[in-house]
Image (tube, rainbow, N blue to C red):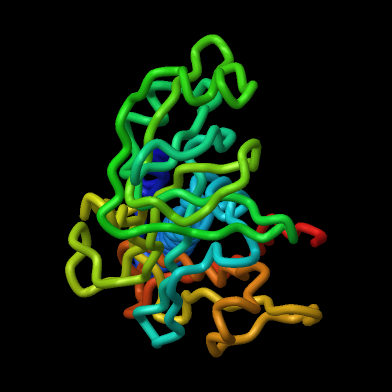
Length: 284
């Protein structure tokens, strides 16, 4: 009797218990896998969205700093609103000075000190001087800037600051009043165009027109990315390009995209961002 009880006590699980155990383990395993996949997808989604946001934000600082130096009258040289190829070309001041007078067929300028590193990365497209009414007259083309002696400026009563320099600029832009503010500028084109870093995607490019130097600032962008244009007396931006002389600022519609779609999707994540830059608006 005791022996039989001991034998019964040593019996293992039966088939029903084994099946129940496997079912319970299966349920726990499925729940664990689902939780893991959910967390993985969530992390992947956040990663792709952060990437898209960084694409939208990264070009803002250099672009905005140049746009805010542009004169509202004559500062925009060209613009396009074409889908996937929106662009704007602006005349960005790179060195400020005063008109000292004329030397033969050249205009003599006394330039204020400028960071040598800034000048090293520029390509002069022309120069501009301020008229009596407050607007600037631009002279560009095959512009040549050369160092000159200080005699013309000294004779005009203009002292070049330490670290500054006197230059002659050709071609001569016409009769210029001595003492007028002037600046050298470069034509910079910002454009959305096919990316070289990520073929088949859209990138934002910066080009110095005088030298042809071009660089892709960041990619990829969604095809909705573009420049929109503020014009005189309007509080909202236009999708179409108004007359260039009426443009007072630009709105940047930046729709940064992730490099790859998130898990389980075929379309990249997009992070829309809008910001605006207004030009130097002067009272005449």
